[in-house]
Figure (spheres, rainbow, N blue to C red):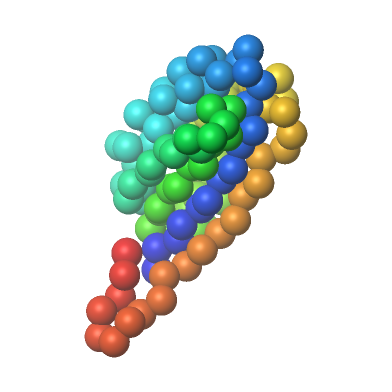
Length: 104
């Protein structure tokens, strides 16, 4: 069953471009993973320092045990304490079946 991750970020103003550059590299690398479904980055129209990343993967265990440890994520994870105003907030969501249709 697929799983969605909603990740909220509050980025330091002076680190906004570095945040976006590093995240773009991670998302580009994720897109070739077989367990990857999609990812969308949103920005708060009222605050350009607030971002919401919505990722969908095919398998939660694969994300935890494999994807989070990929080499292309090292620089990103190491940079987060300097880029962010506070810890990111991560929530995990699973799809519901509605009628006979399971949503991705």
